[in-house]
Image (cartoon, rainbow over all chains, first blue to last red; front, side, top):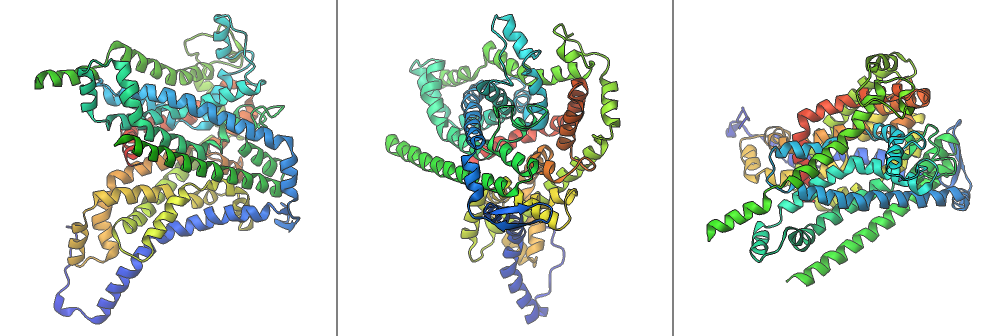
Length: 317
Length: 284
């Protein structure tokens, strides 16, 4: 042990003992204080204060506001753009969650073998994760270019008409979801791989002896065993997924989410309202609505998971 | 019988050519966008729209890169330096403050600890990004707009970090070690330093890496609070796109320049990132 000086017990005086007791009592609070302080000032307070500003007409030059009631909410909720942004956000979220989970499960199943150069393969699927979303978006926005993009060229080679990736809403959602999937599929594959490796090997051996084939083993043993982890992956992706901003913002040079809001997301809508139109009141109303949406979605998730887990228990033993 | 069973297990896990083929395809798919970026970034203004583009990199990469670096609107060196400063500071501070709080939650007894820890978990689900309007107003009020402090200070510690370190220290740090240090006369902070910190090191280095990557990639808040004269790399890249959308060879040369530092970091630390993700998954 590195502690160097040992105090002579005879010389203990009450002051030292008192200090020692204070040390024991106060230290834990001191250690957790920085987190709560920083989270309070820069996390909780701004979120709560967003609700206040959403009720104000904010003057960005004087940096102060006037209460106007629910006018901002009324405006935002009556604005077509907001509802399109909601639609786009959920559409992109679905397209970047479901295919991603399927591909990640497949990759995890591939990695779950006695591979040569195991670490190399695992690292190779994780590589895209370290690349900035902004950089990924800049690259993919050109791969998905409408006229000269390489993806459209390839489609042309197999006789498919060029897809209007920057005009058609659903096509643009696919393109943006692809950027998200590019960065996160490998990451989630590693999480699922960890879950697969925790499956008792005896289950596989027993079923192999019973004559179950590879696919059969995968669907009857692996998938049910990793289900809780898959649910965990979906839940953790909702909070970030519903706030998607970087990719739609960089998808074209204007950053407005498309001429007809084809890929305008709620977070992008909030940004453009706040820092494009300099309307902080409305931007706060949008932020607060998105906040509520995420909370409701999170609770729904939570409730669903608990039901799934409890039904697991009754099914099981 | 025992022997055949063992062989059976080995056979189940023996990779076929299909397995290697699939993994190689995944590898190609994750490398292709970068290779294509290199093709465009080493070409000229016309390369992007050229249907007969060569599959071998051209000779203009250094030229394009120099033009990006020398452009005053992009401020490349400043952006790179700022990204290094921001990510390193944020990652270091997150590790220190999370380990401190994690030590308290995992190993010290104090009133309200379980309630406070539940609060930490609950805050992980709070989308703090949505508080940026008041955060901006706050920063404007105190004259922090345009400064790196405005990016660093709100990110000094995260709920995830505290949760991660608490989980790790709970199982990695035996109570006997703490008691022994206390009996030896260590006060609390010395106990933390000499006992908890060495035990926390593996989890701390992973937390450092993840926080570093997240801070490096962070875009929305720096875009709002920083300006052209003092950007981080993602902000500089967005300037690059706005300035050069007619010549994408420059934009993509810039993208490569901005991506290379983290690719290098990945070569040396990727192994640890993999371990971190897989261990985190088992706890989650």
